[in-house]
Amino acid sequence: MFSPGHAGANAYARVGVETGVLGASPHRLIVMLYQGARQAIAQARMHLQQGNVAERGKAISKAIRIVESGLQQSLNVEAGGEVGQRLYALYAYMTRRLFEANVKQSEAMLVEVDGLLATLEEAWVGIGPEIARMAGQPAAESIR
Image (tube, rainbow, N blue to C red; front, side, top):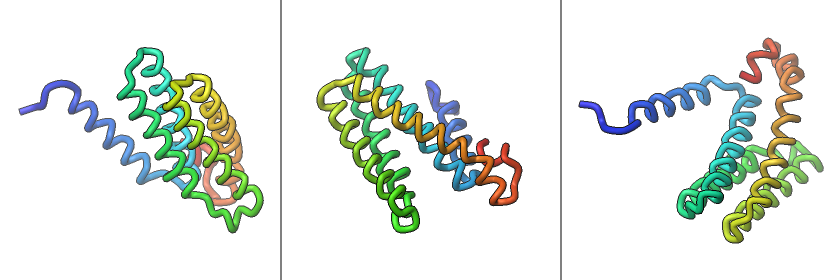
């Protein structure tokens, strides 16, 4: 009746993530993308240290997809002006570094990109109260 292993837990986790995404504000979605990319990088570092090449590659690929398809593609470069253009270029740089980190098996490159993402995430979380104020909702809701 039930599949072996952790299939139930995995399904529950997927539902939780999907529910979080469906109910999230645009601001919260970006926070979730930063967190997802950083988590994938942490997994890549772990797999690099353990010598697990295939899983390292999967984790780095996931981080690249989040940066490219999530963060970079969510930018409105025209409306963002110079800041938007620079952020777009920074995301492109991160993508290249992640690719290089995989090819060169470089933990230092993974740490570098994680640090960049952490800085951006912190800044994004920091503007949450202002975004909430502008949207007319309590600050706690915008970052949950």
